[in-house]
Amino acid sequence: MAPEPRTSARYWFLSWLILVAALYVLLVAVGVVGKGFRLAFGGAEGIESLFEFATNPFIGLVLGILATALIQSSSTVTSIIVGLVAGGMPIAMAIPMVMGANVGTTVTNTLVSFGHIKRPTEFRKAFAAATIHDFFNLLSIVIFLPLELAFGLIERLSGAVTHIVESIGTVDTGGKGIVKVVIGAGTRFVESLTASLPDVWAGSVLIVGGIALILLSIMYLGNALKSVFVGRAQRVLQAAVAKGPVAGICSGTLVTVLVQSSSTTTSIIVPLAGSGVIGLRHAYPFTLGANIGTTVTALLAATAITGATHEAAHQIAIAHFLYNLLGVIVIYSIPWLREIPIAGAEWIARLGSERKSLAVAYILSVFFGIPSALVFVTA
Image 1 (cartoon, rainbow, N blue to C red):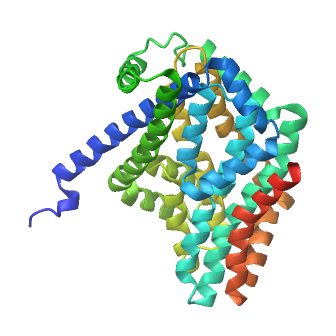
Image 2: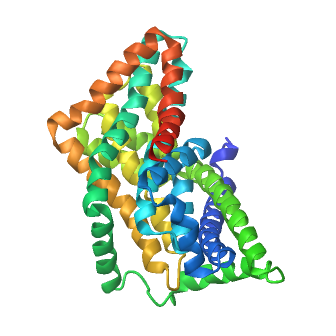
């Protein structure tokens, strides 16, 4: 019997080709966004004045939530943030933004659970499995944002780790490695297309074009990774269900790294929870692993940055990873803290299954209403 088209060698090769091309475009696009900001705003001084309005960390947090909720991809938003830091955005402003991106991406989980809304029992289970991710990320902000504001915890830790990584030579500070040479060639080619424009216009075109390329490349990267790995990812997930929370966190991380989308990981978990195949306490560790796994995109994106801002770009990517890792370690290792997201998810799921309007109100308030109120209060 002839092989199915989707499993043929030609399809497999094409998927890998798209994957490599999309990854290359992503890395080039991040560099282009950084260059665009430096051109459009007249270098470091102009960029500092641009972000003066955002010295309040709550505004950065809200921008991260809203941007990710609208774009539906924390990988995209954090890649853009890496580009912005490369363009001169202060690390202290960027860290609350990546915290917000963690919250914004969880709207996907919640929307997936609405596929069970006509079956109340299933909807309650699916809605709980989805919103446990929300409650965990909100609790993580409640714990770590005050520590960041008071002591610069994540900024200091990420700075130390970045220094260690560079000192052992993992990061090429001179930007002469073969990967960076290839990426730099692509970045220079895109920049050359705007060479005839004034700096302000050229920078604006590079910013808009770079962000568009990031969106496009992550879409194709996600689709290609799903084609290549999604069946394998499902087998990893199913094999780890009964092996305990550590295996769940590790497999959630691995699945998300393989498919480069925490939305894909949760779209696998939520229906399984809704149908009763796995329980809420089994789904919980997978979502935490998805938090860690989704940071890989920003870490990859940071490798595209060379020049004076490369260290800051690497630092914000590492900060995103450390923030998610510390959140999992601190919250999940302390029993009473670990139970808070479970209790919150079960409570909101019970209310939402009884009155569907409350479930809708929950989405609108958490992802849009509360962020807007924060902006108003802090203003």
